[in-house]
Length: 489
Ligand SMILES: Cc1cc2nc3c(=O)[nH]c(=O)nc-3n(C[C@H](O)[C@H](O)[C@H](O)COP(=O)(O)OP(=O)(O)OC[C@H]3O[C@@H](n4cnc5c(N)ncnc54)[C@H](O)[C@@H]3O)c2cc1C
Image (cartoon, rainbow, N blue to C red; front, side, top):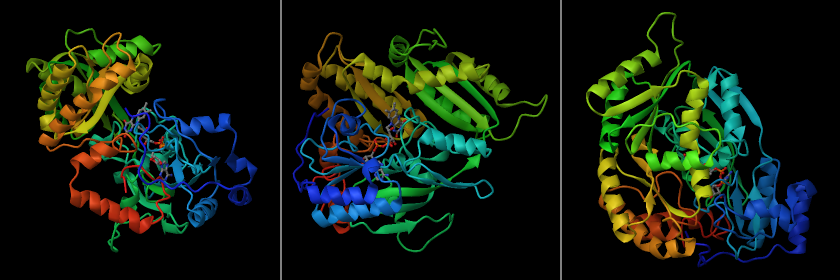
């Protein structure tokens, strides 16, 4: 990963004492962080691989304050880095080392404005932590399906700005599918109020989709109307030892009908990925010691409460697994018998990122191909990477039902980051060329940020890049909104 990439055109207008006074007049002292120690968590990314700088971290408490802050920065040409929970993995929320402007943190805007249980929606501020929103929905006997490893600290504004994926995409779609309306502060400070709870609204361009996945380069999401679903009432979670990735996609393919369309999640894990979690994360048990490199975390869930004596998700899943065993796809399996066992399975899956961070350096590619191509991608991708560096330690995993593999590698034992860095460009090119040849995406869910800016330029067509630049210039002619992210202008 790059430590710093010098972006070609990032505004360098400083936060002068007069501008600082202006910011203080808008947000007060409680909304400003000026000391280096206080700013530190806002200028360093989650992985600890990027460190930037900011004149000041501004923490507005309302949309009106966000608007005034942005208008002031716009007047003076000062660059703004919007930030939510700062858990992004591509450096989008991290200011460059040359950044002379502000980080605008949404963390104080954390109110749930309304829960409409009857209409299956809730209206929230952008700084709400994802897990709080899941709990808010559950308290109203509803379900907000966005779910990912960082849910205890990532914020909904960040989730929408990265169009986050996670472990429920298979059934509910990614973040942009969970949204009915948005409120956004544009780069000139204007507020676009698109906070509508409409299922149907064909009134011209659907502006909300412009801001989702834009990684804060087109405006600042301040509020959202989110869709809700019925709460799951009957859930069965299983850990399967499977023959190989081909068996995994065939299992999933047959699971849809066998579960009456109730597959919630289907996550591929490898032996090496499981082991790295067992090494670094306390209080986690290995669910199965089967002799295979491949595991599946499969969850079926229904919003219908299981009636006494009736067949529920667990019984259906058990029968299905027996059939899959007969077909030679499943080698062994365990169905969680209680909440703690299910949680243990999920902890393994969700702890891969922190565990691999604890393990030390590595490479990871967040790619997608069509689901049926996943096994071929894994085979060819491993061969390509191992040809370049035979001692690198692969642990592919991910949202196999979405065709999204986190194609990840630990450093060879004893190899330092710098040496691994010498191999990284060749491995990156080999993996991403394969993705291109298989008509896939070089970023399935983590976005572009800083890390993939040059890869995006390499793989997307001139027409596509020019259209993106055209939108950016139209909305942000001064290039103050998260400059140098996604695109070089
Ligand atoms: C352990 C772990 C597991 C993860 N698992 C997944 C996963 O399964 N799926 C997945 O998709 N991602 C995953 N991620 C990545 C990350 O959690 C998501 O990208 C998340 O959506 C980012 O939210 P955040 O609030 O932390 O955003 P930040 O990191 O603060 O920001 C991300 C981007 O959005 C912009 N931004 C933030 N808030 C706003 C706003 N209000 N308006 C405009 N722009 C804004 C920032 O400028 C930046 O470009 C994981 C990360 C970790 C650390």
